[in-house]
Image (cartoon, rainbow, N blue to C red; front, top):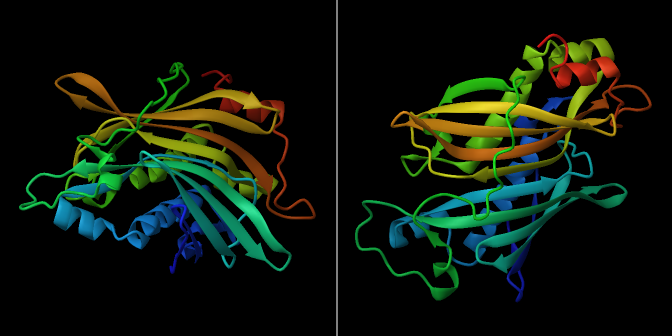
Length: 298
């Protein structure tokens, strides 16, 4: 990525989604939209002379995404070129837009807001003092400011636990933001299997594929390598018979009590994968709505 820097603390850069994200046909999933946002914000820091390597080794600071919120108004194809724009708003806050290039010009593919923190790391000798313009980002713990309170967990909530392995972590210890993005994708998949409406079965029987129109992932507290992350997924409502609004909350157990470490929210629906309506949203019938809400004998 080669970024262009302007005088108003903004950069623009071309990028492409990873091949890994084209799981159904050649459409790219929401996780890889969020990966592009992360890469664009990292490039903003590199373009201003403060990449993660320098921040860690010279200043003893770990760069972390603390909060990432995205709206996804358009589909992204694997061969699309994306033009990312990152604008700094101060205090670690950034606005990110992704415009998707195609034969007809450019289409807005993402609107996003990101909050970044610089976390003090232990054991880094002879740290250099950071420039004033970034010193306001320094934090003692990886938590997003103004985290939304946890929504009520219903009896029909889905629960899943996973071990924070080293590849989920940053800087030899801390579970990173993108690990929770991956967990959000996985817990939705596991929830749908539990409800007997797995992605594969819906694809075979109805030609439906999952589609996400907005998502947000926030760090609440630091989770550490090899801790067990207890994850709860709750569907709260069906919107306009086309999408379900749901939350994910992640906890660890410490001293016999749960500690909330991350939270996420997602608006998830289905699109047609074949025929003239391919790519368009489908209406959820009453049976699917009841299944998603846990009202069929659960």
